[in-house]
Length: 183
Image 1: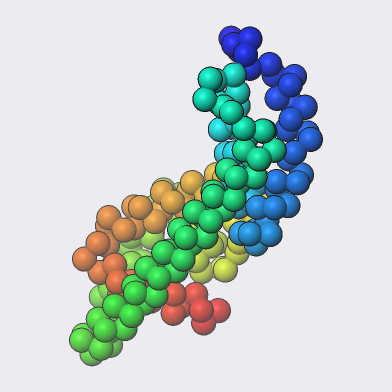
Image 2: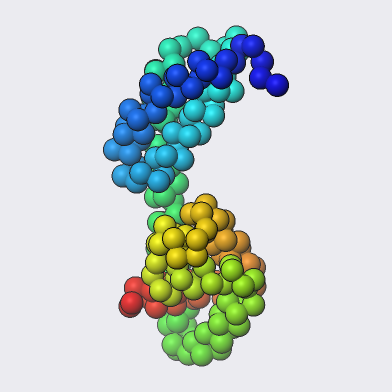
């Protein structure tokens, strides 16, 4: 049951009045409509949770812009950290290849085995993304599933592979990036 202090019709009106503007605002910051939609959705969820509470003392418009601004910046920081980690992993892979004299046959076999052992849909989505170079939206369309399902399955695949190949992770990530970049 919805508390009286949170009127769904008032919230719907606020959503309709402000959604497009804050979505455009977030998109200009993060440069991705899909990511901006997620950020704005979270801002509206937060607004819904705060509506009617005693600690909500600001205008809805300023609250949404402030929330979206900070969430967009947090997203960019997270992307920067992911990119730095990826670069460090590639560098570690280069060092490992140099140390092993470039003999990667055993590692390639282990990687292929780990990929083959993924659950069926998980493995299929992983291969479409990493080996065929498809974007999540393209995979979702091809498999008739939601983009969020693709994202979740990729997360699951990466988690399984990370655990199965933890001893070889820097080198494997390097090989995957090298293989993917060559396509």
